[in-house]
Length: 154
Image (cartoon, rainbow, N blue to C red):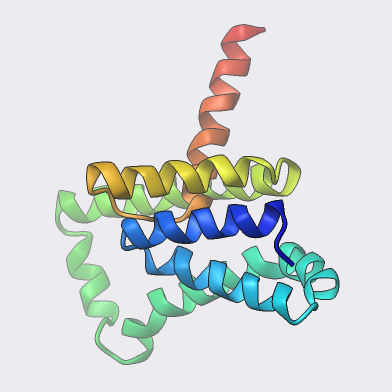
């Protein structure tokens, strides 16, 4: 069980601990558990294939809870678009969703970049008191920048 991937996961766990990134620590803990119980050959491909969809679905559910609970309603929506802050928030939400879409494509086609994205997130949390927003939006930003570089480099 103790191989390069296990060592790498332990390094990520340690960095997550230093950076107080609970999501990274839980993810590593779960993956190590799957390895420990020798279920990795069956579960890892399935998780890699379906995990992003699960994650996006869970995040979407969390975002919609205030609507489902009645905390946010149509009146709140109408009030929000009466101010330019509301329009800025609306545009930012649309922009981030579009950028994240590119991130899904990037992670699907170049999964090796996930490591660099996670490491960048952890380093920013540990050394610059950043906030871990996950690799998906980071991948989206990376995808967008890569397309811009490709456009000007060709």
